[in-house]
Structure formats: C-alpha cells, structure tokens
Length: 63
Image (cartoon, rainbow, N blue to C red):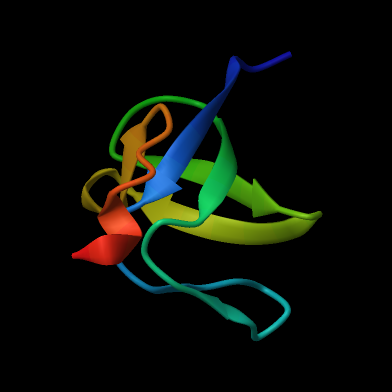
C-alpha cells in the first residue's frame, strides 16, 4: 500500500467528478514524486507537486 497523508491545495484543482476544489481544501494524498493521487470525499484529483502542500494549512484559503 502506498503512503497516505494529508495535504492542502494551494490552487484550484478539478476532480474526476468535475467538481473544482478551491485553495485551502484538505486532501488525502497518496504517493510521492512529481505527480500524486489526491482524494476529497472519494473524488480523485491528479495532483502535480506545485498544486498542494504536505500537512494542513488553515490560513491558505484566506490569501
């Protein structure tokens, strides 16, 4: 099983469902490297390294 951790979106990212998630959204992140898998309530988000930060950042949405 791949490593799983929490992250925070830094930019708006569309999910496979068509929903776009805003900066500050908490995502479950799996994998490492230039691209990883992100999930929000079961919706898959293909994430590039620059679209999220590891860990939780409550102040990002306020920027």
